[in-house]
Amino acid sequence: MFFKVLLNLTIAALVLYIVVKFLSMLFDQVTFWVTSLEEKKRRYLLGGFGIFLIALPWLTAGNPYLLRTILIVGIYIILALSLNLIIGFAGQLSIGHAAFYAIGAYTTALLTVSLGLNFWLAFILSFVVAGLFGFLLGVPILRLKGDYLAIATIGFGEIVRLALINGGDITRGPAGIPGIPSPSIFGFVFNDNISWYYFIYLMVVITVIISYNLLNSRLGRGLIAIRDDEIAAEAMGVKPSYLKILVFTLGAALAGIAGSIFASYIHYVNPDSYTYLESVTMLMMVVLGGIGSIPGVIVGAAILAILPEMLRTVELYRFAIYGLLLIIMMIARPEGMISMTSLRGGKKPSWQFLKLGKLLKPSED
Amino acid sequence: MLEVKNLNAHYGAIHALKGISFTVNKGEIVTLIGSNGAGKSTTLNSISGLIKNRKGSIKFEDEEIIKCRTDEIVKRGIVQVPEGRRIFAELTVEENLKMGAYLRNDSDGVKKDMKKVFDMFPRLAERKTQLGGTLSGGEQQMLAIARALLSKPKLLMLDEPSMGLAPIIVEQIFAFIKEMNEKDGLTILLVEQNANMALSIAHRGYVLETGNIVLSDTAEKLRTDDEVRKAYLGEG
Image (cartoon, rainbow over all chains, first blue to last red; front, side, top):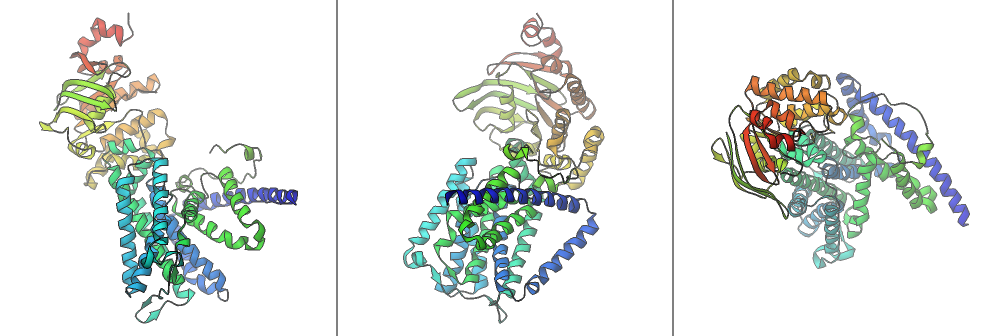
């Protein structure tokens, strides 16, 4: 029995390695192709992709499970992009992002259920409240560096989760708050997956636009400069602590939005959805996709949100394979699926496949 | 233009600058020479505000700036090219230059200055869209200087521009420094271990030793001073 499991996992590892290598090359080719397109053609491509996004729910007609997975992917894309602002753009390692997700979700739950407020008001307040917590946390802890900051954010994540469990009558402990109403607008109620799809993916598009504009602004350059070399950035007149707090607040606020959407989509909040593991999953999405790379992070979020669903068929090996994939990803493709540098153009990638010698050595690029 | 009086700086428990005083006049190249650990870089970092733990008086254009933050100091026109170049590796050459203009709001002026530095360093123009990290050492030093120029400095502080570069590149860089001073009247405070090179283009110089200024004179005279020749110019 033991050997059989070992054999199966070894085979799985080899298959995964080949799949990861192949996908990496595919992504390299596609990235190179897209980045070397003319501006005009790239617009057409973007337009085509937009039409695909609009048509997507109709393409999945008859498969509610698939559409539901796509919705969850959308929520994770918002979360991963919001974390990417903090980790990817500002270079600050945060492993407590689920806390802001939770704050957004509970803000919506409390305001709509306990106070009977309109969803849209609660939605905006979730953004504000999560951002406020991000700001209040960011001011004292963003002067910490690297590992110390990471530990502080883990601490914050745990505090929020425990506060929700022990929140007494307000948060109703581990049982959570049920009965969050569906949002409605001008009498139209969001009570099916298709209307939710458009709402969630509108928010995804807005998050993507915010990310791109931030990256290409003076602020974004300042952030990348801080990440590359904080002292040099300061010598240019950048105020590192100011920018870091700003982007931490924005990242937290966007995670709050994701929380608000999730809470009203499943009509229910409880502390189990916002654990440390959830924060780590978000971190993995960013790293796996490519730290700082917006398309990369979207791909990373999609892969890690879909994979557990796909692996349901191999129930017994589900989490073993999930873990194995992460290890293999880090060996075969440490820079992430679509790295930030690959987006900046460069040499035409080759299709040269499988340098097996590299399997045992950490890759140098 | 710059008047430093009784400047003290601390790195943790280390008293790195023990009350140094010196001046830089408009249009001059002034150099601080001295061996490793004498406090040369510390002096520049204290003026630019990168070191917060500093006491004494720093007057720039007759205004006290010792309490100012780095961004305020940059805004007033003191810009530092930090030691070891410190190019932003993940930004393109052009974006690196835009970082130099981070605090400026006159986009037309920035465009004009951008063109000017590209004329001055054609190599950078060729590599405009390349990532900073892919440049050679000499190109990175040019980029570091060009980046500082884009913030429109009145006083440019250069920290070891010769570090780690081939002699022929060092000569090029120093020729640029001299040209900026002569043609554009840019005031320069230059810190160098390569004392020979520094004294060959500077007007005046100060010799630093373990946090104190031990000697100050015109560059000409320092070059012929026996002590300096023995200690810093490698001549017996």
